[in-house]
Length: 567
Image (cartoon, rainbow, N blue to C red; front, side, top):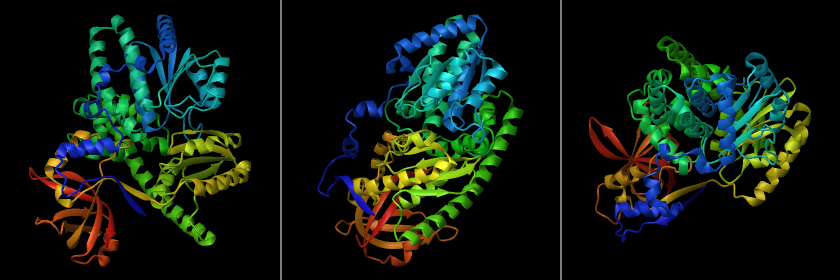
């Protein structure tokens, strides 16, 4: 493991805290600091800002005709948190504007991701729509969209996933915006429709939708953006920054019930609450059952129904946690066995098990990447098909890797560090050969040693509350805008175990060249290194800075990311 840093602040430097933060932003290649610190309000962003003049005209003309003829629209949305939040935004907007509109969420196990022949046939039979609008999928659905068009259905695609070599040629319009999440694309697409039709809508509906786009829908788009690990840059940073603030004013009964049951109602919402509390609950239904209930929860106006569905997703989330815990342990044992047999950790981890629920294989893959710093491909089989989920390290584009062997796959799609695919059982051998070849090439082109990259190396005495206050202006933190990491070399004065099982350490570190009180650094789940710690030894610590508020009092809090003994 290596530690690197982008900028070094010397003890002789006299930069102010604001100037230190500006140096940090420059090291992240952020040149327009003013715009970064004050992102544009999503209310001022239009889908036309991304282009699509022809597609906008086609969409609005088609929707005008459909509304006039009282024809049906189906919102065909993905089953993950990004798709469910985006589907909620678009379905409810069309519904409130008076369209005859139905939602459709494919079943993960029965239909898989995106458009399917089975799903399109079901939509045609049950709803007989004039138009299908995709949310959070469709850019890779060329053949399925052609099938829908042959049935006489119009199709509009809204998506953000990696564009394949051949995009759907038969779609009436495609809104493909990679810098947004699926819910982000749906938000601006729905806003376009609302602004076009609001002149013919009642005052009450206009007021409700105006509020929703300023608060409820913005909060939903923020959930989808954070849940789908979209970089918090440009318009996505705007969506999340303003979306987090919007949580305090949401009216959605279902969303409020989720927060209440999770114990976070009335508290400030950050990307942490979305990523680790709200989104996993929304995702739980789609992972283990049918995600339509997650959409119903976000759309319901009934308190009783919200309580019922929120209880259900809370229960399913606990089941999901138990399944993941067991599966991850099994996966680790498999990796250790492979490593022992081969004498080396594989460059790309590939694991299969029929016992793993396909709804959790992405979570298993993510844990493998976190544990071993290797791309991971996790598969489970059923009905003659392998369903796979892949996660990767930042330097390896896993979706491009999978799409390079698309002739072997039934389908593949995703992002740079996350992808899903399906494969006929009979082609597993060929697939593994290609992965093995890719693993060999990976070893020669990428350094697989894990690197902890701090933003700034600085003396410990520069860690102050004033610096924390300047750092807070950079929020929200997440993918594409991680919480700043600092690296300090100092002397350990003391170390104490704490926690229920003494699994954590309090480190007291100071600069030996400066008269100062030591800084307390909390090292969670680092008890394994406690026996190696000795008073007055040199120590290198990578950490984040934050405020700890207790009983109304604020104090500096440093959280350890990594420790280097005898630095």
